[in-house]
Length: 174
Image (cartoon, rainbow, N blue to C red):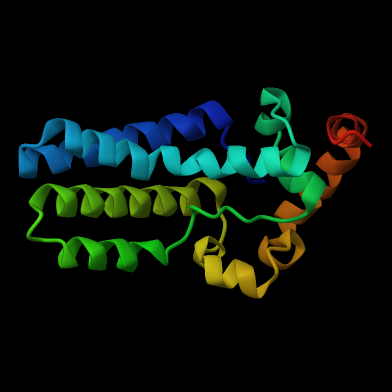
């Protein structure tokens, strides 16, 4: 049996890894604030797409519903617009093209590396396939959770959907 990592621990892992990426970038560049901000943006605040998705689905925010992942259960979709491997080469390419503007290039490169670390940790924490974090793959499946997630997650989601349906329906105003 695979047990999910509780959300506070999941987020703590991301935050610590983001700080670590920022710190390692600082050690190399000697640009403390720039490195730390880029590390936290790329490695931790990437998760703001979960909040945006919740608000888009329910037109409001509930911390309780958010921690239960209701946005995915209710919509049956998983957009996660900031969670995508495709951003890494784009950002690294931009950093390279802007290399003469050293601070900008460093900021973009650290942002990319922190995002990469976030996605790698998500693969292990969530135990989803690597391809799940490809936005083109999710798009090719119309962002449908039933097409994207392993069967064990879908069975768990169906049970949670049944358990939380009355509260989610109330949250959705239906």
